[in-house]
Image (cartoon, rainbow, N blue to C red; front, side):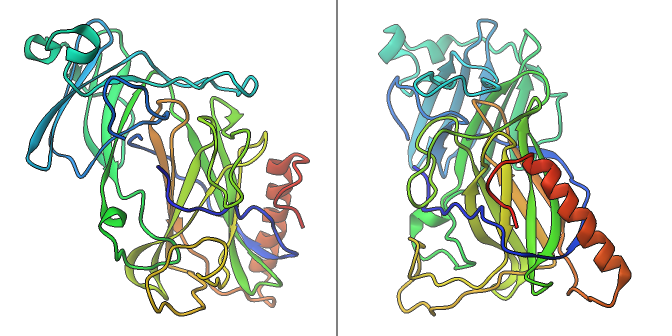
Length: 338
């Protein structure tokens, strides 16, 4: 389900730093199966068009969309928000029940044909990549958003159809969504830019129990964070730099903009790709976190850094401040330390 990712959460020796205040925005959620639950922050379709959302007074949502030449009527129910703290391995995260037959598989009748929409206009938090959203009779929110989750890393332009797909995600929540706090500094005596921060939900770090050796989460608690870079060596506009998971009790995120070899560590790459890519330093960065449980995905965006100047007292001061900020976020967690 997920693209190949790497867990890049070790921090080298520190160099000077720069702080960026976080900007929070909530983005849509995150295959196809018949009357079966999918992973949380649920993917419900790829390359869907003519999308319509309806919600009844009994906690069910009807998502109508076109997939290719076929119109689908998907019923979703049975989940809201997320468990704020992983209790222990084996206790499942919340997830929707799904019926792509419009009710025939689960309820033995075509529920979609007589579905009564009771959803009011949306008045919740701003959602990037929003397709549609509404407020249910019980005051909770439902939303559909879409984004290109499977883009190749290291700034490669998509060369496969599946890499260009737009993933349609469904969310159902009440209260505040998850939060990304993001900061920038430099590492290796200022040679490289470094991004770090914290991914939390209701004050608790977003994290899973385990990942594959390439960093993909292996349970419904682990969450990927996707990093995009703007106007970098890869070319103009936004390109996917990398993807990784938030880590440990803090929900720690940490990434250095280095040069990478696409032929190692499981990176997908096109034929005859060069053996060195990056660093993907850009004038802006964007992080998109897959929402815990069935809450919305969230997004941060902010400007990149200028080249570090060891003779500039402001750069030295900011580096010192960000070293302290990272230690505060880590709170003793063993990753992303000097």
